[in-house]
Length: 269
Image 1 (spheres, rainbow, N blue to C red):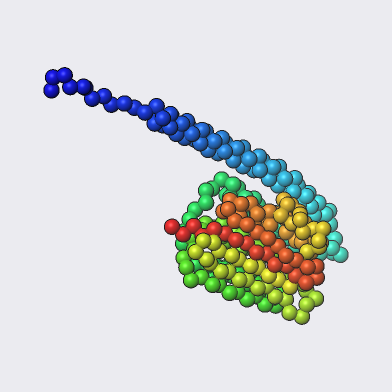
Image 2 (image 1 turned 90 degrees about the horizontal axis):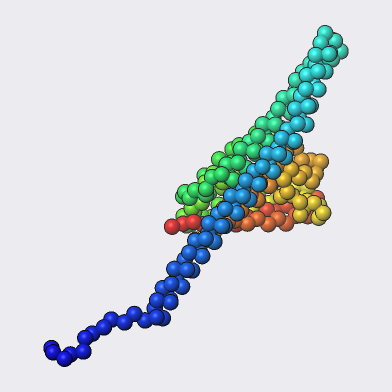
């Protein structure tokens, strides 16, 4: 219509400012994520380098021991008073310790490099598989093992990492048993909730001294003469649980036993 006022579309300066602010915030957020990812990579690389360096030094001792035993075996050749089986058995034991350390090394590297995978897990099935690995020592040492699995809801987690954690905790409970007890026990209780899973491993073994307890998750720490491992197991448990966003606590009384309690998120979709 002639003389009508033309319509104009106005853009609010407030809307423009809000949009610009949102874009700026998103850019900052993305930059923070990138920075955090970079820091995580640097941290992981540093931890791997430290672990490799520590392992290389730890492996030197058993290698030197094997070399010394081989030298003694050669020098005693033909001597009827010396049984070569003693040296061969010592070499075999040393090799077994080295193999365990290398297994721990592989677990640490796998945990450092691989992302957390999510699978449905039957906790009883995994626990029975892990216990089967220790069946020989359980029977030989007459250790009474009881397990209670309470799973009424699906449990989604990293199956391999879950198995590693269970294996090290059970191995620890068996290793630090109290042979003076009439009845040596290891009790395992697993309960699955909709948002998390708890695992309790309890033993009536030798327990942990107060001054030692704060160091048991340190790399290569061996707080007892009874320790036959490499001092890596509980360190790996801690690192694996960190990767899974889980947690671990320990209660222990010297000469009475220890209880390890872990909590792992249930990543059920």
